[in-house]
Image (cartoon, rainbow, N blue to C red):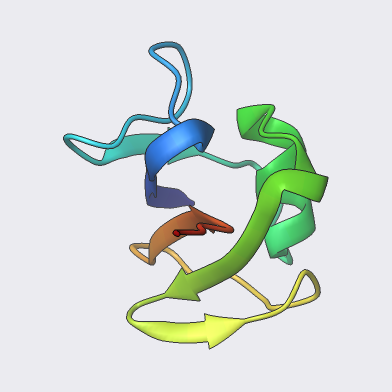
Length: 79
């Protein structure tokens, strides 16, 4: 299955997850979860505050389907 992934702010890296454009990733597992995807894109899980799939917030156990759009968002703070 193919998943489109974006990583925002400090989670972005040039290899597996970018912020400026989605990267299409193929996951061979039919019952893939957000946790599987986190492992696949090598994003430090402890730095992820929120995960969105197709615009809806989900947890690590959320199931993925072909064509899903996933966004990883880190915790952000301000003064």
